[in-house]
Length: 407
Image 1 (cartoon, rainbow, N blue to C red):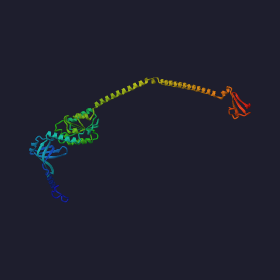
Image 2: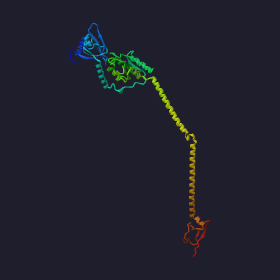
Image 3: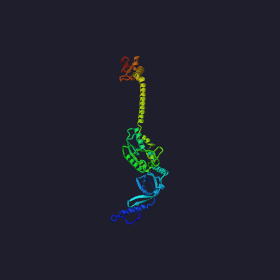
Image 4: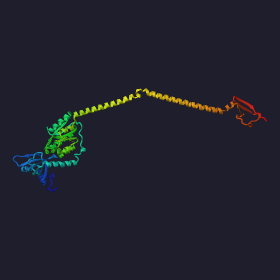
């Protein structure tokens, strides 16, 4: 920063006039600049050749006074009106006496429709690149909002269309209406303020931003960058219905839902009571038919089950089981008898064999068994001595005999 002399101190402060002069000197160094702005007010004072214009930045709440000779205005923008966009070559001037800043123009050009459309297209590409038009971030409005916020012009056709059609569709719908300027220099800040108010209202579930049709210049506020960013920042879903179906201001692309007309916005904000009642009747009828069909099908199934023998004559199942048990018992009895008979026959054969091999059978045939005194069977005469007693076993008893050897 260049040195302009001694600095001010608490002991040596600058007078107001000095501070004002230094500010004027700094402003004068800016030189001639081209300024783009929107005309908020035009003042032509009688008896003077100077015209005063209030220029504002549509994207910010900033304005400056622009002064120009009447001939300069008539040459570059003879039909200039409030709300128009201009480009002016001006030099900033600071008036030390009043402490005010203004611009003195020597050339003023009114921006034509073609240039406005080109600027809107450039802004559209910029906002699109930043993701403000991304379909993925758009939110679906609630099916039945608690309260609908409406931003529109005062006593306009758009307000009447939205309120009338919404209440015709859903008579109990509640609205919070904020009337704003929908064209001209005051439109953008008023709409941004209204958006902020409705977005802070917890009872408002959806916001409708609407106005009727108009020229390109009339709809310019709805392509303003600041308004588009305000709509994008809203936490509450926004429905935009600007102009007619052929109008496409940038706010339509940023809003969560684009409606072709104010009437269409009302249809998108609230459901149709008559249609919902009709759909409920249809659903109730379909449900009734489905339930009836289900009951009939289950009744047929029950009838088929009841007609089966097992349910028609339940004792049949017991009789069948009883016959099966009786058959099994008979088979078991026959099997047991057969096994007993076979076992008896086998036992008879064994008994016969035993009897045939038994010493008693031999004795019955007239034979005898001779046993020595120790109990052993005598088989060889040489095994006994003369006079030794022997035991002779017969079929009907025993005898005692003495050995007498014959020479």
